[in-house]
Length: 353
Ligand SMILES: *[C@@H]1O[C@H](CO)[C@@H](O)[C@H](O)[C@H]1NC(C)=O
Image (tube, rainbow, N blue to C red; front, side, top):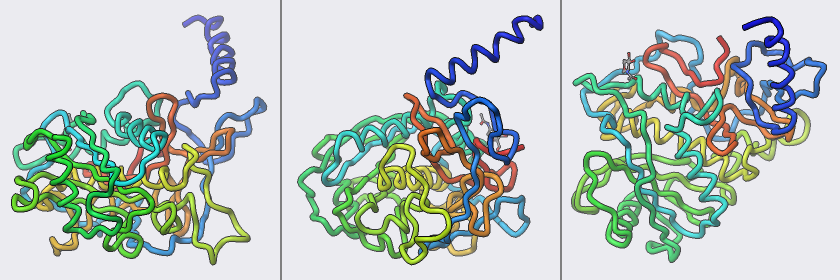
């Protein structure tokens, strides 16, 4: 490249940034705020926020010999593509569905600029089973069912979740997709679920032949907006007793505390479900009934320099919205990091080298 073209490229680049307001830079190299004399498009921040009220958070950003993540000989989701069968339970506005679907479709799309959601999913593909097969890089939405009439009421238990799936399988109808399928059940903000807000924001497990007809992995995540945003949509909402003084909650990148909070929990559950679908593959700890999985190890961590109340360095757009990765259609998302079996540490696409 001649020095003349070299000169024109950055100018063009700045004009491009100014006109489209999209984030198109490379991986950030510094923790300091952007001191560029041109209007900053993106700031890098590492806010210290009050600890969430509920947390089982075990943050291990640095490589740690204390974490014994072990493989227990079971399968991972290695068949490609991973077919998601979505169940929208309750009242779901279209805009909210779109945000979540754009996130799911970002997992294996290569069109988003770095740091991207698909870069984040690449860490999943480092997990293998005993045959050496890796978690699939391709994730699709294969089917959808809207349970708008709340077929099992507004108070669900862990067990009735499988009845909801059974109902969807018959009504949609969903094909029996043993090899590639998973169910993702999303409940609207007016639905309570056993342990929701108190012990969990979502969970994953597998269906029982006696309930659904066959065994298939599934995950459930609830919209916490009305019930416990400070617990399940942190850091977009922070505990009330800590509000006032200090930094406030972060602004959600898609404009909705409940939905943006849900997306990080969906990511967490999908990561764990893919690496531990039958709860006999990748987890730490000796107790298989309370496994510490690859998302649990990094809960509350979104960037480099996190821990001790800091969420880690994330980006803030000129619109004030916080994010740490890009998705399709100029979407931005704030998603927690996950454990890398290669680095033996939590990692994400916005990691500083
Ligand atoms: C599969 O996993 C192994 C072990 O982590 C890794 O070295 C390899 O790069 C992975 N392959 C793909 C295609 O991701």
